[in-house]
Length: 438
Image (tube, rainbow, N blue to C red; front, side, top):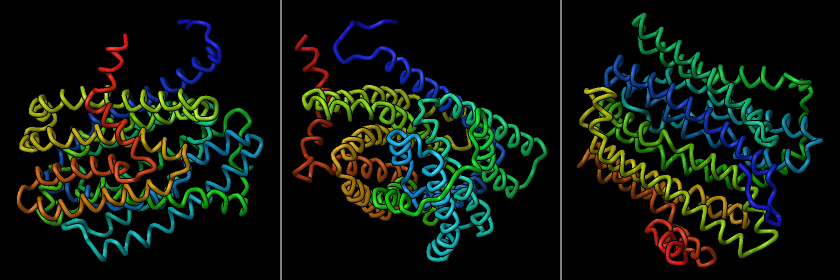
């Protein structure tokens, strides 16, 4: 398809980025479908209590994932884009930083477990899954291919890795293996991806053994990324703490049921990340060249987030009972909670878009305050609502927390106009204005 000849418009660049985005979507959607099928099989095989036990172990890993990754992913792509000749130093430095972060998380996870243990989840399960942080150091290769606009290679790794993971879990079910086998299988998922990244990178003259560590670059990266590390920890808290709290307040069985709600509701949350990551360079270019166009692109991005998330939320709200009939009847009573929880995705989409604006404007520290506020709201509401309402209480708390975090910018004078822009998109005012202008 060809577009009109417009000044400043680059047809080849558009096709390149569109192809890259398409490949990323294919990989993510393919992986999602594979995981969904396997998750249904695993949920049907394991009882609610067993599913809750393994989910409790996984939750600790999510809580420390931001520390393990050191918030480096976006900055790695930026550095590779600006200094492609320094590839080996950038990747080597980032790899060793992430590896150190993953190792450092193991004793911290142990400490967190001692302070707030998950009811019914043995620590040895948590320890096995802790290895995930070490394997994730190889994700720097994902950032490299993003910088080269070659996400098709990462898509291939993810799809093949998920197919192998699915086959392993189905074999475990067929052999009627105990719960501990599925704990090892979860950690193995990340080892498979790391192995795939390694062999993919080694092709076409690239060599991981040429990577080198540069202490000055490490300091530079940490200076930029530390607010995102703290922000990421807060994001993990307000996105995952509800699962741990419901396990300790209501027991592993309820945690297992709620895990299905969260996994179904959050399965599509990769969509805004893919979109904003792809469009971010265009937004930065507009900020440099034309501020009016920059503002329009930000508003259009908010609009797009609503156009994608709102219909999905409506459809799943009215089909949640049907979804659970397919998923597993044992968890069917969780369907109303899914109908509420799914609406949090609207605010996840808007928050992802707004985060790009904050990064573009240099307001990275604000991401810490907004996510910290969301985490606080989530914890307080969970303590109040879970004992009274169970799964529904956790879903309501999550929805309010996500909305509070997304619109926290309304309280900050220098960025409150962005909150107004998001409200215009949310209530379709921006869409109505476009229709009227036509």
